[in-house]
Image (cartoon, rainbow, N blue to C red):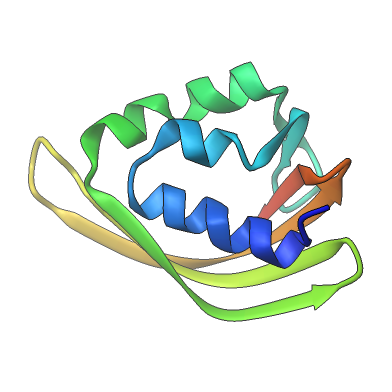
Length: 114
């Protein structure tokens, strides 16, 4: 079974390459995406794929990991991200904490803290 740290690294590489198939392959078929309060943002790989399709089509984004902590089935990344609006060329950047949780050998849960 692939460790959660390896999956977190692999999904970020796919994200930065705008490879939606490789990105989604890191996630469980019943993946849950949660906001900072624990509310479900999307559930299931099809909803997850739809959530990222438009962004990946632009290829004008990226992210880096400042710090990665791993405890058991959890991986928490402190990420810095950037995006360029394809219509205006305006760049925005920020940071986020993302907690990944392993489920049956894939990322089963991702929670974003902004």
